Image (tube, rainbow, N blue to C red; front, side):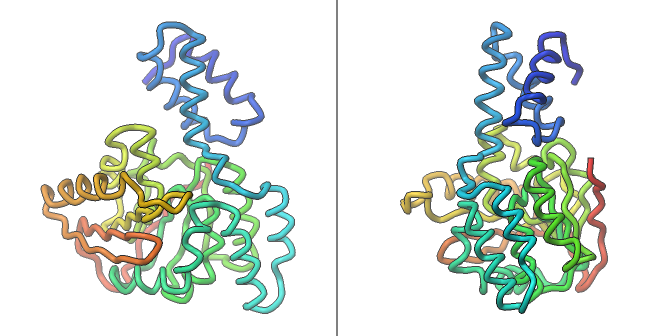
Length: 282
């Protein structure tokens, strides 16, 4: 999709804005181009793009500054218990991973109890989830690759993984733009599917279909940030289940108090099969 003159000007302004400097260029281009047909003027297009970017970046979900978290993780040496406590503190700084803390000990054993062994795991739109690696290692030794469109999260995750998890990585990528290049044995889409659907209706379904992973794990929150039942979960879950059924893909569910997990098997996998979490940082 080529860009016209007004789109190019807005893309450059958004890339230069401090608020969006760490957002992947593919994300900015994609949003501007998709909002362009809906806007009657350059000013309206920029307003629409900024509003959409605000929702996509979702900075309001972060309760501590990245600079504070970076200092905190740099000090995360010591015993395994101390390291896990520091990781819990970081995970608690983002609403999505904070909501999982009560189920964290059970989460990965429950997921991998349903999906089986894997050689590689891709964590899409991972945000701060690389800090859950100590608990992931309780369930699997799979190679881990996280992906996020926000460079601040990517750099924080890389800093944490560098010395402690040499077979793990975090990549700066917008997974909605190029999902087929991700070919891990298992792709995790944890509590971000609804955000993808909000960004582009049908994007979550297309992502599941186009990913080069034979098993896709999608999870939904069971409560809003205010503690109320989530209104969209069952609607999206129904559409996803119908989508999988039309293609003959088996679907299993794992229910936890804070999260509903859906396992979609697009193709049979072998126990311990070695895949690829390809995707060098852009």
